[in-house]
Length: 268
Image (cartoon, rainbow, N blue to C red; front, side, top):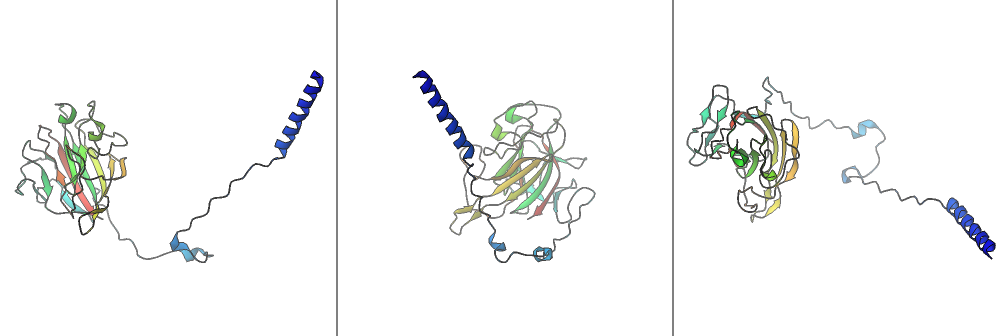
């Protein structure tokens, strides 16, 4: 009986193996090719049928200081003509330095552009003091506010940990940067920022969120993030309806001594 049982088992295993060899693998259906509605219709047969020649993009030259010819220069070291104090719209009292930069004058208040902007490409350079004082949020703290409402954090984070949604290049209290690309304390940093303003309906409801992209010293640290609203120190983001607004630079009020230079903007 044992020999018969083993023989039967061997036959069953052999048949099963042969069946598996004969089974063809299941090939999944190919995904449907999705064609944008713009391209529906007869398929082109010549390369020139998909070539366009208008509109021709405008020529933008870049000067020896890497400033585009269509940019609005907001600060080149020559003065504060484009700026005013935020609290009372008077002349700027921050320090104007001989090296073409400006430095926050402690406890005098923020400054902002006299012009209002919506969608922009902003270039701005900043540095924290080489002489290190304070820690956490009290070291080299300032901020760049888009539309006067949305802050990209400026902070000396070198060997100076803090809450990560408030560290350098954070969208304050909303988005942690993808990387920390800071220069050593006292070195000049660059922010290149693409800002798209939110849209609001006639009755004040937000219908489209704003977005911000930030490159810190050429490193992508905020990748087209969607603004949840304003960036308050205390509380949740709010979404008050608004139009264009100024660019604002922060006086954090604790002897941060942050400096700025080479500020220009392109309206998009």
